[in-house]
Image 1 (spheres, protein in one colour):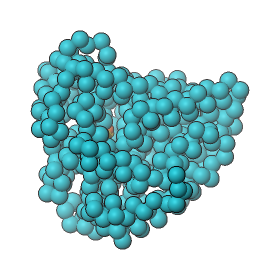
Image 2 (cartoon, helix red, strand yellow):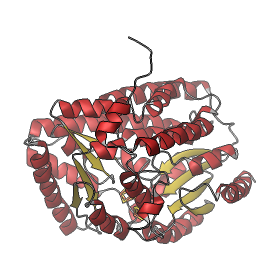
Image 3 (cartoon, helix red, strand yellow):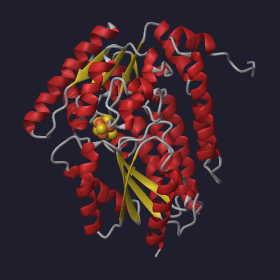
Length: 428
Ligand code: BJ8
C-alpha cells in the first residue's frame, strides 16, 4: 500500500464543499489539536488511534461514508443524544453527530439567527451555510428535535438548506410522556424506512442494540478507570473518545476503546497516571462539547487540575445507560429503546432531579474535589439549572465554579485566572 497522502479534494468537491473555506478550517483544527492534545505528557498509547481519527476527520471517515452510500446505504445526521442510533443502524444507515464546536460563518448565521443564540446552534448552522462540513453534506436526512427553543426554531431555518426531520420530545417524564415518546419513535421508524428503503426487523434491531450497547460498555470501562488516583488518562483524552463515538464506525470504535481500557486498567494496577496524585480532581457538568471544543478541559488541565468525569451528553449521558437486550419482539425492543432514551437527564426536562443525583453520585464515584458547571451562553435551560446544581453540590460539600462561555478564545485568559483560583481553593 502506498504511503502517499490521499487527495480528498475531488471527494470534497463532489460533496459541494467550499474548498477555500474548508482549507482554512483544516488548517485551524490540527493547530488546536496539537496544542491541546499532542502537547500532553504520558498519554495512553492507545490514544494514537484517536490522533489518527482526528487527522482523517474529513478524509478517511468521509470516504467510508461516501462508499457506504455508493453501496446503497444512507447517512443520517443527528444533533442530540435522544435520537436512537440503534434504529438508524438497524435500517442500514450510519448515524453521524452533527453538533459543531467552532465558530464558523457567523456573519451568514447572524443574518438568520439572533446574535444571542447559543454557540452550538450557531456553529451547526454556520458549518452548513459555510459549506465546510462533509458530514452534513453526506447526510440523506438530518434529524432535529424539540429539546430547547433555540434548536426547535433553528431546524425550521436549517430545513431550507438540508432535508430535516424533527422529533418531538416531551418535557416531562410521566407515564403519559413515555407513551407519547414511544409513539414518536414509531414515527421516526416510519420516516427512516421511507428514507432508507428498508423495513425494520426485530433481528436487525436486536443486533444494532447489542452493537451500540457494546460501544457504550467500552466507554463505561474507559471511564471507570478514571476513578483511580492518579487518573490514568486526561479528561481531554476521555472527552475526545466520546466526541468521536458520535461518528466513528461502531465495531472498530468499540475495539479500539476496549484496547485503551485494557491499557488504563494496567496503568491503574501499576499506579501510573497522567497527573500527580494530589492534582485537584474536577467533575464537569453541563452542555455538550463537540469537536473541536476542548477549551475548558484544556484550561483546567493546563492549570494543573485533572478532569475525572463529564456529566454531559459528550460524557456520561451518552454511555452510562444501556438498552435492555431482553426483548423477544420488535414491539418489546422498541419499548426498551423508548425507556432508555427518555431516561437521559437533559435540562430541557422539568423537573430534572436525575441530573442532580447523577452529579452527586459521580462526584463521589470519581472522587472529585470540585464541580465545574459549564454552560454555553444563551442556553437558558442549563444556565438556570446551574443554580440547582450549585446549591445541591455545595450542600454535599463540593465547591462549584460556574463557567458560562462560548466557542471564542477571547475569554481564555479570564477563565484561566478563575480556574486557577478555583483549583487553589480545592487544594487548600
Ligand atoms: S440531550 S444537552 S444533546 S438538547 S446548549 S442547543 S440545550 S441552547 S445541546 Fe443538548 Fe440533546 Fe439536551 Fe444533550 Fe439548546 Fe442549550 Fe444550545 Fe443545547
